[in-house]
Image (cartoon, rainbow, N blue to C red; front, top):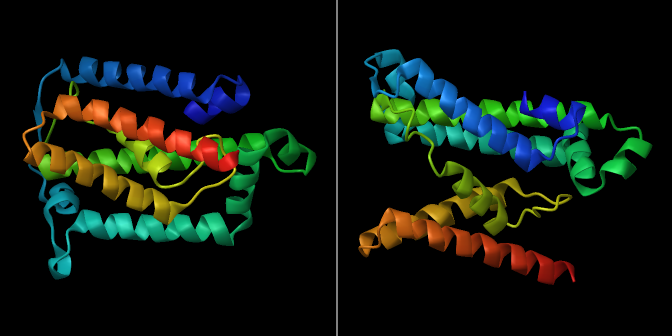
Length: 206
């Protein structure tokens, strides 16, 4: 639906994302009456608690997705089309790329991955609170992408870099927590990291 808003009605991506983010959380709160929901389904909890060969299941899921995304982005026509559309949408249209379809596909894949991440978080906690689940993750995602070297203006992306960026952001967060810095204050640090990463990108382009 997000991709449809962006490609069909040409709504700014950040606006469409925020609108659906607010709407989605509101719908979840209405459906659950704002109450904590608990789950005790072993098959579902497996993705959050299982450790096949001593490796957490969510790490395996992440590794598979990262490998698939890196391969698709750099080894397929679809991946090249994504980079082209991100770099110059008008030129991509002139080159014959179905820009609207590419956007729809990218947003659909992004939504699928976000949904999977949400399921993993719920499975780990065996519960879900519509008021809190996923809160602040959008900032983590932006920070991971920026720190990882992907241009927020589009045209250049690195999956491995984004993975390293995500690990860096989490390392910073847990380091701050270990030193007694409250999680709320860590948001300020994340915002500063994003601003600094974007500034570095601008300096590099200049």
